[in-house]
Length: 159
Image 1 (cartoon, one colour):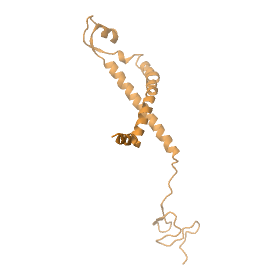
Image 2 (image 1 turned 90 degrees about the vertical axis):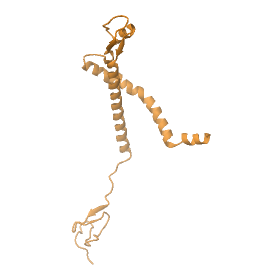
Image 3 (image 1 turned 180 degrees about the horizontal axis):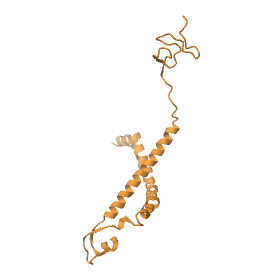
Image 4 (image 1 turned 180 degrees about the vertical axis):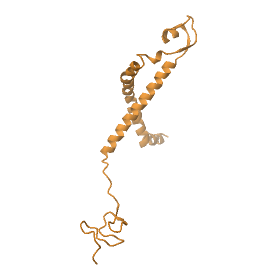
């Protein structure tokens, strides 16, 4: 059983997954900071300097009657609330994190394709300039009309 576990744990995809989880957990605070410290403040200004997490709906009043100025006051009073603003903030945060990760993966893929040296592939065929038949690219003579295909000698081949 120990041998089977060792074989399972040392498979390439399991190790890759473990590395991805470790890097993802290290990357999460960076993306959270991007969302909380860079992206959300301008959105708050755009919508009138509001914090969406303070929007709530009182379903049942607490020991102290409302209205409640903040979600914290409603909780202290024991009111039952529907915290739709906190939910909206979480959804917006998720969408921004997902978009930031998308942009990061797109940039990494672009860099990776440049590193791999995406040199254009050499063509495998060409058309004979006289009979327009498709022939191998490196051919020096057309297999159909026997034309000489060397540069400057595109006329019919001499027997």
